[in-house]
Amino acid sequence: MASTTMTDEARYEELDRYIADLPDHKGSLIQVLHVAQDLFGYLPQDVQMHVARKLALPAAKVYGVVTFYSFFNTEPRGTYTVSVCLGTACFVRGSEEILKEFEKQLKVKSDQTTPDNLFTLTTIRCVGACGLAPVVMVNDRVYGRVTAKDVASIIDDCMAKGGSENG
Ligand code: FES
View (cartoon, rainbow, N blue to C red):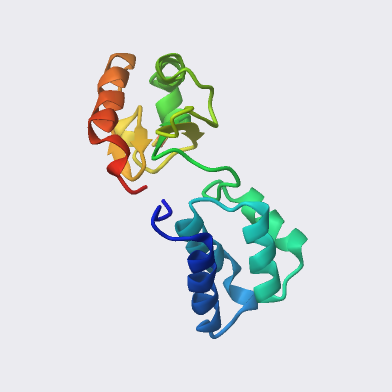
């Protein structure tokens, strides 16, 4: 998640420095977008346009890549991104019920962020941990064999840490 102490101006400067050091501008789009997302927390249109200009690429190409890959976000995210896996192994072990429980307890639907900006709820398709199905990820942390009953304690874990975790 973006550092809250940096101004947008400083973020753009850091991004420009990173781009200036790249040996191959046009072939580095995904890499640059990752850096931009780390700096800004997400990829709003202004940032996408800036990247397009700096890499001398059409804005439509940048937009196409941003929307194609699920790890890029065009909307701001909460401190904690709760990702419920709906891949086959997790789905057959009841991950849909877990998703519903998160929706109920956080009072948001999938791909929405809570009004306090603490949680964004989302879904993913297989994170390669099928042996632990059903799987929920909170930022980089994997919770395995989750049941609907565990949802409250996963939320409590995050609330206990408050807004201090970088995601
Ligand atoms: S299907 Fe969920 S981790 Fe593979």
